[in-house]
Amino acid sequence: MGKESKRGFDYESLDDEYAVSRRTDPVIARQIHAALGAARSVLNVGAGTGSYEPEDRHVVAVEPSRTMRSKRPPSAVPAIACTADELPFDPGSFDASMAVLTVHHWPNLKRGLAELRRVTRGPVLVVSFDAGADTEFWMADYAPEMTAVEERRYGPIARIVDGLGGQAEVLPVAVPRDCVDWFQAALYARPELFLRKPVRDAQSAWSHLPDGVEARVVHALADDLESGAWDERYGVLRSQPRIRCQMRLVIARS
Image (cartoon, rainbow, N blue to C red; front, side):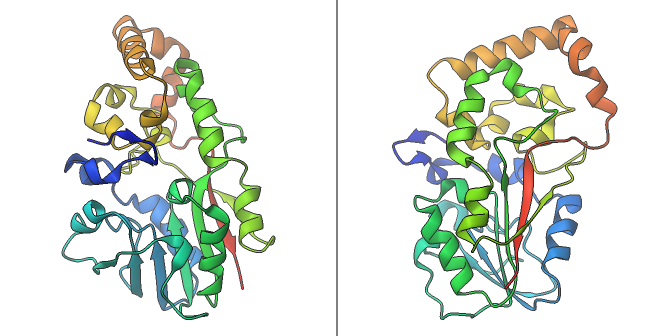
């Protein structure tokens, strides 16, 4: 499972459950792939196990984690071992580039975004979270500490826009009720899944919480699900097909 380290979330210690919990959701994928436009060559930075890589274009994947590279499926291209802030490609090498739910792990965000822009002729796509945006997601009611963690990790979406040159389109991402990519907000209608430790282990924010907070949250949530208190407060979300959350798609065109 993932453990916290001085560098943050440790992807090298993840077990096989990660690939089960974090998969390409088709609704989100359609939005990302549409934003790639007519690009035929795509660079995927922080590529992980290959989620959201288009199958109908030439993809080059970059991933620093040996474990994540090893978990890529046989159908995916092998990933190059390097980091976002030092990409081994010539200027304008790719029609488009993408970075999906990864920039909050980069030690040098400004440098990494500049590198994406340098090696890309056309659009640069970044999927991240806007920590200051309104949301219907309820986790902060159980873990106020999570809000502070996410604000520190993600910061304002303007940092990404500025890092890509100051001009970009910022779009909300549609997160469906049955989303198969189990980041936290994707489970807005399925709170029971948070009681499963492998699911939490695949969500990096938990590893940044102070000691004892995760256990407290899980205990409180389990009690509220058993008593019906969660459904009294948030049960309407169980039938809501989409959630208003902080997930954003940033598109910086050339």
